[in-house]
Length: 190
Image 1: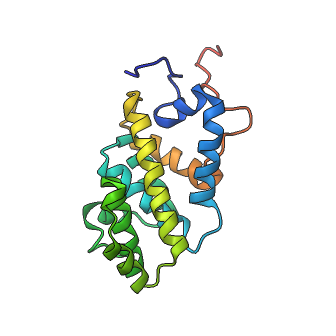
Image 2 (image 1 turned 90 degrees about the horizontal axis):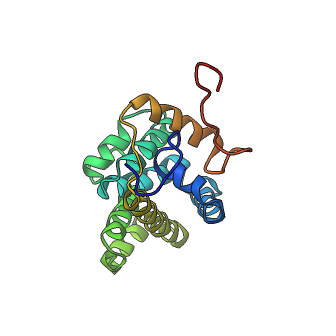
């Protein structure tokens, strides 16, 4: 049960963002820029960064949502699962492995990111901008994970919920829908 009253039909971060629209706007804008804006990393690769951080932070809502978005963007469901198990043996490029390593180190502590980790990424072709964005995405998702867990938001257990959420993330990105999130109509029309 959430620590504060949140819209029951909006689990996870969605209810928190709707709770305080003024703080939600810059959060949504930054997420949209980092995960959907122009980048040499694909949208699927950027979702993998969000996935590994949320998985390591044990934030069920964020892990499930971003795993599903990554699956949809990559067109299959094995890569995200394998990245969460062991990114070093997952079927991703050496550059992506180095960036996922940086994301995992950032998740532990920003001070865990070593010059060796940065050099490894550079040696396999990662640009400074890709390294910057990886650290920022990882740090941002640590914030989101703490936000969601710190206020004890609800994480649905039905996989169908995350299928719909993944479609929404992939189709619309991270911006609030026009008119906000509406509660579903009850069967009696109220």
